[in-house]
Image 1 (cartoon, rainbow, N blue to C red):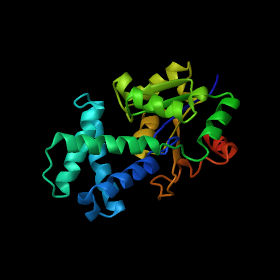
Image 2 (cartoon, rainbow, N blue to C red; image 1 turned 135 degrees about the horizontal axis):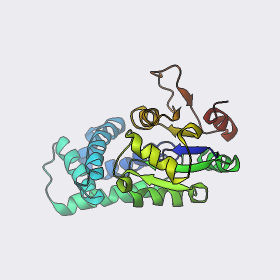
Image 3 (cartoon, rainbow, N blue to C red; image 1 turned 120 degrees about the vertical axis):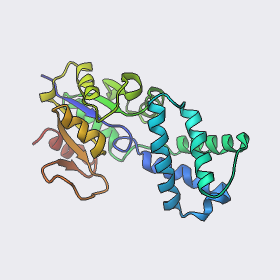
Image 4 (cartoon, rainbow, N blue to C red; image 1 turned 90 degrees about the vertical axis):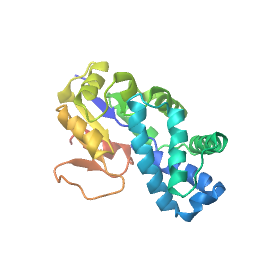
Length: 236
């Protein structure tokens, strides 16, 4: 049976961290209230609010656009600014979004890796806790689309990693089986936990080389060279 790679997108193939930090630098430079925080502190605070509101978006309680406005309302409040003017918040929100998209980039080696995965005869499924439109844009603009057999999003499926059902659904999309599938991603709490819950082999993309909580967990630190990554994915 053909092997299936169930691959995360954000911070596995798509460099969400770098794109976000570039966009925050633009927002911080134009907003004095945020300059009281260092770039690292601004990034940390933004990440906390973003992750909390992202869960609300996935639950259907906020639209992506409304959540982005709310994110910057909360950040301004944390910076001591009582900002209720919709125009200013809209400007911040869309200024960030434009800068974020302008900074979009892939993790180095991503295209070569997915091309090598397909050349090796694997099916490639992107499995992501995000909305369909956003992830399709990233895949298309990043040049990944020709190599992707299926895109499975939590928005469309109705459950998020680490729920094993979304992993099993991704395998079914390409006619695979758990014993011939591998989950590959950067998050221990979603990608790795979800793969294990579904009874699927997992490989952790430990890009920042943090200490592993499990010495038996297979991991890679870079997507280059692709041949080395594929050997790890295959268990060789």
